[in-house]
Image (cartoon, rainbow, N blue to C red; front, top):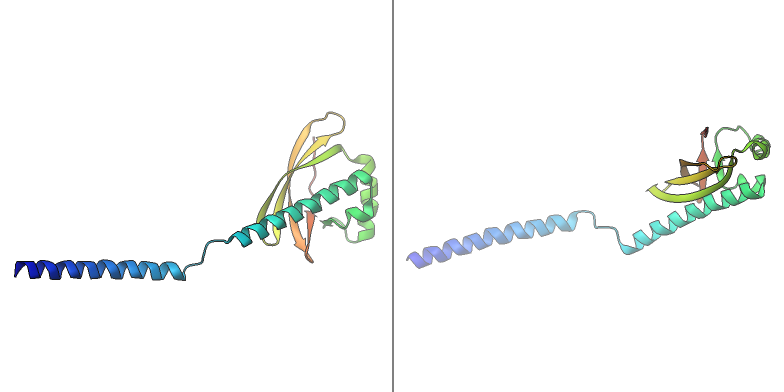
Length: 152
């Protein structure tokens, strides 16, 4: 009789354990799955595209090509592309930096990233770090400039 009670108690314990385990599995199956390799690769590709856009922007500045510069930037300081181009031409004479280096690009979300730049001053060679937003506009990554000043 004692062995039947122990057996019944053991089966009941096993049933409770199994039901808790099944409920846990069921809950895990309904939660959001982890990122797949494809999603991670897509994110890395987008970061590379954003970095290439910034590199294109820097190259255009080095070549003093205002038409190319405006392709890679959204500059909210200006009311028209013509004004933006005029100001950029003047910038070439007053630009305190001789070189810009992309040090990092971090994804914020599907349409926003942050680029970290190291700017080297012309006269002193002194480096200055700067973080700027990059936005995806019409499928293209662009540097977003909203009035940032860099002072020594």
